[in-house]
Length: 122
Figure 1: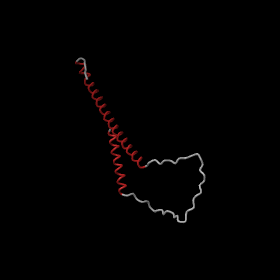
Figure 2: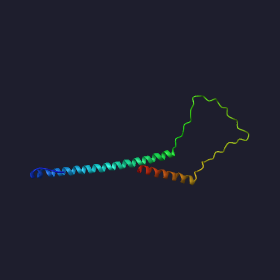
Figure 3: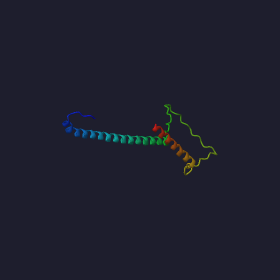
Figure 4: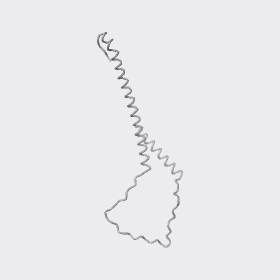
């Protein structure tokens, strides 16, 4: 910042010029700080959304739709059960996953999260 003028002009105008300069400088500093905070919040939100998308993609794998053809199928005659055919008993509750299956799934998710964080850091 530089000023030129007579002593009387500087005495009259310099204080207002300095106040104006400092006010502009502080406003710029505050605007920059707000912008940095907003960018950091947006980056954090994007990371969380990416993690949630990757977790939901793992949990809900897309189910392929059966292929459809325009040709009508001939009606099939069901086979009669044989003399020794027994219906398969249906259990009342499904078999719970074993602890090792759950541990493997958790470890796989942790490894994927670490890979995602490493990619985001790049």
